[in-house]
Length: 286
Image (cartoon, rainbow, N blue to C red; front, side):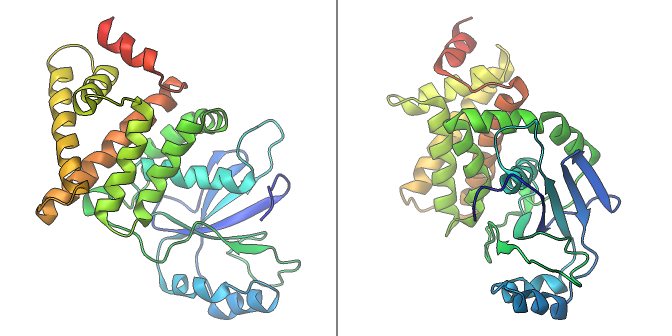
């Protein structure tokens, strides 16, 4: 679909729960619960041109459906209307809502599918199968999650618009869930981490030193973080290179790799700047 800059679109999603019926993230971006989806009303969308309607039918029988309402905003640059909804979805994943799933877009609310004219609809970043791990599967969107997203949403939007590395990190923190297996997910998470740190020799030591220095104050906390990252990198290498590991060890590597990439992304969003080599050097030596 073409770059969308006008109008309002409603992105059907599933996989989170929140208080109330509607939450305003920003004046042009809201989340609203979808009370009920009807198979017959979905079929009517098919008759009006949405040929993929049948793929949405399973959501008629699920709880926790919602829609992201994304509208034009003349004062904002960066992502278009639909990708701003994707960004909100991704920031929810960053807050450990890893079951959140954007399914399909429509130019009318999914709460009112009757009398839809001039249908504009399509599937979004929808995958039938996602990797799931219980320790990252938080269903409830808490007030702290919403506050953080409201405060930092535009920072993330601006950074993504201006920096390819940051945009890649965001894409990975969302898309690892669609990997064919956990080992592949770990590999792409670390590809994003290594892209941010950008080291090519003595990777384990220098990467661990750089990240721990950036994220932690000098002292015991930094040393502990250094050892944790170095150990995690060793586990990552064993997983990627096919070592015989227990399923629990592989899942731990996935969870900890996700958390580490999340920490780096959050650091950049909250500082409102892309991390550069000079930032790592300053963190280590100053």
